[in-house]
Length: 238
Image: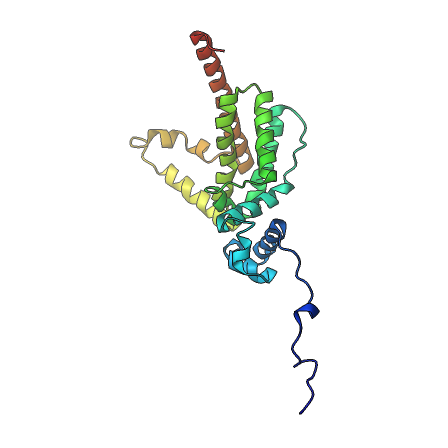
């Protein structure tokens, strides 16, 4: 009988290199790699299980489901957001939210996901904590800050989603030109406000409008705080 060659001889399990221990961070790292190369739609439990050479059921010990996995991947991305800004409380808060929005703009699939699924890891938690601290520094009461943080984070998320569809500069210029033409030919009798504010509707670049929108929300939070305190004073509550 012919002797077995090295290629055909059965290989003992003890001879195989041990697989790295499965960890939550390892799963997230695999997801980040797939996201970078193939997009968020390919970041599935089965795909990651294949990369890590394990059964997909094993992943559920560390990640609840695909939605939780995507949320954890976004949280890992948020490690790039600096938390040590300078300037007034308002400037630091606006800079923080701008950096948060930049991460989402660079990963549009995650931005769309973030509209319905918030990240819940340590980096997102640190951002929320800092937003609350800056609102407190700015004079917001606890109730207004707690409710306002959702709106403040929603703004950069929605703006990132709005810009998530890649449009060439030429196409964007055509879109604005078409909008300007429609406003210009609008019947001032039927659309008096549209005709009057046509120039303002198209004025301002993206960053300027984003900054203005954040100022509106921040001013509203402070006005709400003042109203809450006045009501408490009238009712004699602390």
